Amino acid sequence: MSDTDEPLVSVVVATDRGGPFLAEALHSAVGQTYGRIEIVVVDDGASDPETIAAIVAREPRVRLVRQRNTGVSVARNAGVALTSGDLLVFLDDDDRWHPDRIRRQVDALLSNPDAVLSYCGMRSIDAHGSELVAADQFQVADAHEVLQRRTGIILPNIMIRRSAFVRVGGFHPAFRRAQDLDLVLKAALEGDFVFVPDTLVDYRTHSGNNTSRHRELVRSIDHVIRLHRWNALEKGRLDIVADHDISLRANARFTAWSSARAARRLAKSGHVLAALGELLWSVRAAPTAPFEWVRHRLPRWRTDTRQRR
Image (cartoon, rainbow, N blue to C red; front, side, top):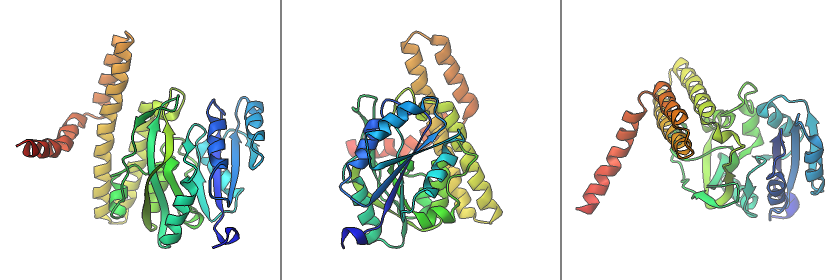
C-alpha cells in the first residue's frame, strides 16, 4: 500500500490554556512515523491566545483555529468538523505519544475492518515525565467488558473511525468531564474494539489537569454511567443494565481510592482537618465503597492464599 492509499488520520487538540506541555504534545504528534496526518489545534477561548499561537507556529504542519470558550466537547467536535480524515485521534495538551502510535493503531484497524475503534497501552507519567503507573490495558472480549470498564479505554489512547464517531453523535456538548467515557460507551455498541499491546501513550497527571479534580470527575462518571444505564433500561437491555451496575460499583471504589489519596496528601502537608473532610466526603458520595473494595479484593486474597500454600 502506498502512502497515498493509506487512510488520512485527523488529530484534534482542544485547549483553553496552552500550558507548559503543549509544545511537547504537538512535537510528539508531528514526529509520528505515519505520514498521512493532519493536525488541528482548537483554541477554546484561552486567556493567552498569543502563547498558544507562538507554540503552534513552531510546527508548520499544525493548523490553529480560535473560538470563544464553549467547553472541551464542543471544541473537539468543532475540530473534527474542520478535518477530513477517515480516522480520528484526540491529543490532550499535556500528553505525549510514542513515534509509532498512529502507525500501530492504523494497522490494527486496517487488519480488523469490523472494528470501530482501536486502543493501545497507556502509562501515567508525572509533570517531569517519570512513570507513575505502568500500562495495564488488555484486549476486551466483547462490548460487555467495555461497558463494565474492565480496562482503561479513554480518549488519550483511542483511535476511532469517523463513521462511528458521526453515528454516535460525537461528544455530548453538555459534558465538560467524562465526555470520553460517554463516547466510548456509545461506540461499544457500534462494533468491535481492537487492542494494540504496546505502551504508545503517556498520560500526564499533574496539578493543573482535570484528573486531579477527583470530586468533579467521580460525579461526572457517575452521571454518565447512570444516563447510559437508564437508556439501556428503557430499551429492555437488562444485560447492559447489569454491565453499568458493575461500572457504578467500580466508580464507588475509585471514589474511595481517590479520596484516600487526597487525604494522605493533605495530612502529610499538615492539613489534618481538610484530610478528614476528604474522607467524610467519600463516605457521603459512595457509602458502599468500603464493601465494594472488600468484595473486589476478596478473590485476589483467596488466590494469593492458595498460591502461598
